[in-house]
Length: 501
Image (tube, rainbow, N blue to C red; front, side, top):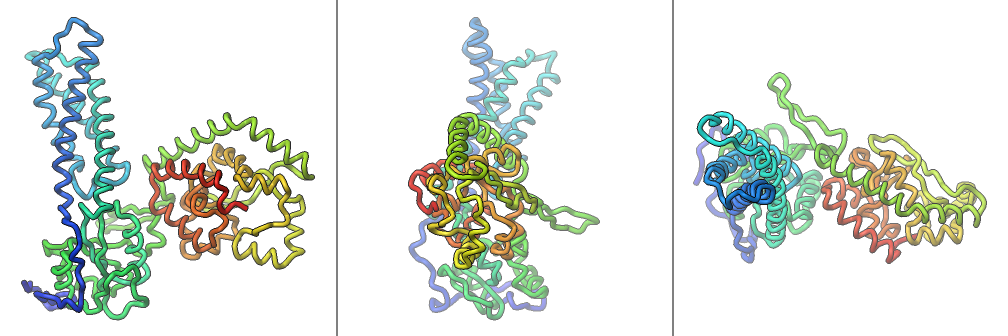
């Protein structure tokens, strides 16, 4: 099993076996088929959707709009029989059957749209080239077929993806991964992958040259002898190595790729480095044939940004229209029951670090800041936690508004102004930004939210460390479906009043 290479590095000793004392393999692991097995049903599913789309378009165009047409026409039957495998080929060329590009993100649906559009253009070209020997293809059939194919393929893949997610949560269709580098970045990667089983990655341990600054948690075994890497790969059925460059010296990194970069048993992936920064997403471009990595200025881009903006503006507009009488009534009650304005403007930090005034119904006495300065114990609690339990500055109406989070309803106008989102990290003041430490850069790549993970996970009962963790979890794992789920969960959190004060 030993592979001949040049001068052996620290990773190149391929031992044939590893003692049971070194690694305790989990013998209870379920049978795990390779992810490629999930592609074949997807090909068949796409073929069925394409055929049904062509048949449905024919019924719509020639049976519903033209009652004299036969149930089947030989010409359109031939189009379906020829076109379906051609469309499947186009899907393949667009990476729609590449396991590395499946089952994650809206980019798959964008590729479906593009592939179906190219397939439509293929039919148009075929009609042009055969116009003298074949009947002209109906434009109504083409338009209907394209629309039905995009919708049916996208929705079938959406449902199939959910099936794969459920199977991955049960241990199927996963890739066994060994992380090379047990520094802070490596441990953060392991925690993120463990917390997101839908990604289809199962971390089986760490390999680290020398002694790491801190032992990994989560029950992951640690290989301190890099020369036994081959034994680990064989014994744990490792399929991929995720390398953390910040944990290795340059020569160690080069030796690792030299010894394992061409080995067909494992695939090497490089972590981006500086995990705290690259959480926002990256782009790799070649300049002068040199690959350079650039950070995204915003975490949410492309189709994700379009979907989120649509949800924000539509939701805020509908919310303001439906809640207009409630907003007006609360404003009047606040203004009549205590001196001062009905709306309080709180200076907070938004996208790219820009400051803006977040609107809230005033819930405190008008001289709340002066009262805080006069009571050092309350000021200390505020600076440490950002909240004061049983805050004496609250008015009676304000305490009730906070218990149901009604004081935050005016932030719907901030959403319409593009300063906030319906769902996002908790909005913070410039002074609170220091609590986020080396994660502060990530916080400034998304808009703060009217609600978020913090709202449905305890609200004010959470300490700063937990809030930072929840905000970073949201930023790393954003999807439009997460936003929708959090919006529905917020209703229960508000009704139960957990952590509201």
